[in-house]
Image 1 (spheres, helix red, strand yellow):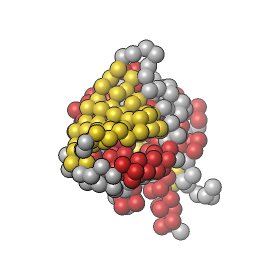
Image 2 (cartoon, one colour; image 1 turned 60 degrees about the vertical axis):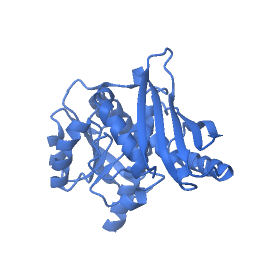
Image 3 (cartoon, rainbow, N blue to C red; image 1 turned 45 degrees about the horizontal axis):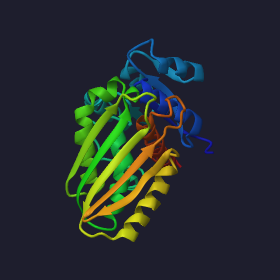
Image 4 (cartoon, rainbow, N blue to C red; image 1 turned 90 degrees about the vertical axis):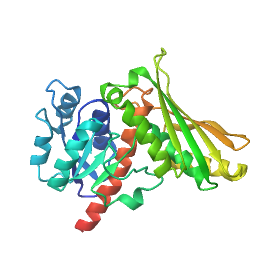
Amino acid sequence: MPAKKINVGIIGPGNIGTDLMIKIFKYSKFMNPKIIVGIYASSDGLRIADKLGIGNSSTGIGALLKDKSIKIAFDATTASAHFKNAALLKEAGIRAIDLTPAAVGPYVCPVVDIAAHLDAPNINLMTCGAQATVPIVWAIGTVTKIKYAEIVATIASKSAGPGTRQNIDEFTQTTARALEIVGKAEKGKAIIILNPAEPPILMRNTIYTAVAEQKKEEIIDAVNKTVEKVKEYVPGYRLRVPPIFDDDKVTTMIEVEGAGEYLPKYSGNLDIETSAALAVGDLVAQKLLEKEG
């Protein structure tokens, strides 16, 4: 463990922000969760932060900006809020890691393109659906050209809080663009379904691709290797349905079970986003520490 860690802040003490705070507190190798800020004093996330000895404030982003030791800020609010927060963080010289679908900075998936964006002032973690499916589309794309990629993300209605529901349009737009920009599909489309079933279902993502060549063995190998890489930071990530081949189509399904830190295990859609944030944050913090010597 490094003797020194990078101080980081979290904006938004809701489900995602609180789960991320706990993950950083328990597992981060290079980050110290210095403060979490929100706008409601009654927030459960602020109460938990207080219990863990982490600084917290209900006065909003201003409290984070006043702390000159903060080098990285995770935004777990909404897409509309991040547009405002991004400008403030940039002005303060604080790296932003965005867990909303605002897409201000480059689209980043830890197993695909993080190495190219470690110095970016604003890193966008796309959406939970993109974090779950883009690695698979990208893996298939390393074998053959993908003419079209479509994903259907099905999540438990109970795991979709106010922030998720406010961002439905941004979710579909950002995920579709991520399939193209990061996944390298010529055309992408995303659909989200909130399933009210009881007991709540785990997150499942069906991935359809139209490919130029049916290189079956190579596609299966690429998909399996990529699943194992994602599992390194999202242990509950698994291949529910291996690649199925039909003419020029390849269909797979990914299931994501949450770690159960703060969120229920059925909230894999939120867990994969916070797990990606932890992985990316540690890489950014490690590089900052190396620069500091």
